[in-house]
Amino acid sequence: MKAEEKKQIYNLLKTVSLGINGYTPAAFDREDPVFTDDFEKSSVSSNQISSDPTEAAVSAPEFSAQTSSSSLEHALPAVQNSRKTVSLDSIASKIHDCSRCRLAGGRTNTVVGMGVENPLVLVIGEAPGQSEDQTGKPFVGEAGQLLDKMLAAIQLSRNQNCYITNIVKCRPPQNRDPAPQEIQACISYLEAQLSILKPKMILLVGRIAAQTLLKTSAGINSLRGTFYQYGSIPMMATYHPSALLRNPQLKAPAWQDLKAFRAELLKIAPGYESSFVQE
Ligand code: URA
Image (cartoon, rainbow, N blue to C red; front, side, top):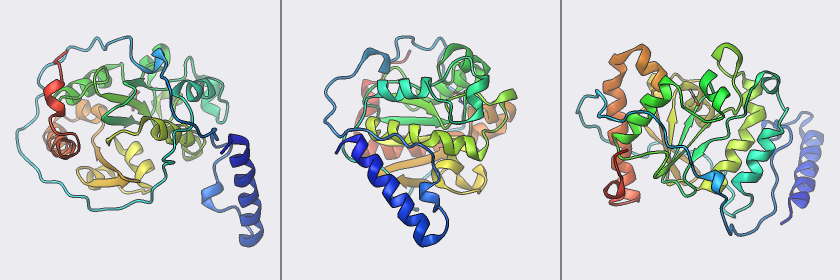
């Protein structure tokens, strides 16, 4: 189906829904979702793959060595389109041109994401900070360096088997939390990225990513460490590396989360860790 046809159907349903309900249901809250032509993905451009390996020194993180079990306890409705629709390049160019919310006015660069084209894991953070705004790359500051260590501890890396992005693609002023309307304005870009990347698992880092994807206002302490589903994709939340930098006591529970995540990933991608190369 063509993007234009989808848009027409969407607008028709939105109008009918408004007529029936007397208000616009939440499903239609988003302005200007990304509609794309359906076609099979043929090739992938070079800017989808990081050409700039992280400079972070990677060493074993100071995590505890406890184990933890995992279970698929919660179910969320599937929101993915199973057909390949759009390229990461076209999403990136839409994001570069985006002015859907006020964050656009304050940005130096949009931060689309970086990683491999067929990631085992999609890592989703909150929003770009200052370093990310300056470089256009996600998680390159101090928190990003810790994130790289956390991922390396379970044989994951943005250069080898992950893609890293954020809930919002522009930096909020003074690194404040992205506002609900900013998240709402940006979320269809993440959904489009997910529909292309089709990761085997999703790792949500921090409260904002967890609350957004799990559609809840519950705190990170209660959300972390449990497996949820994004459509058919297992998804877990853990603490944001910034939280670990502020409070090192959170490293032990974060390590438990990561070990449970690795155990689940090994079920889906047996032996994935054997091809990991320490960077
Ligand atoms: N924190 C985030 O959540 N994302 C980034 O890209 C950097 C810091």
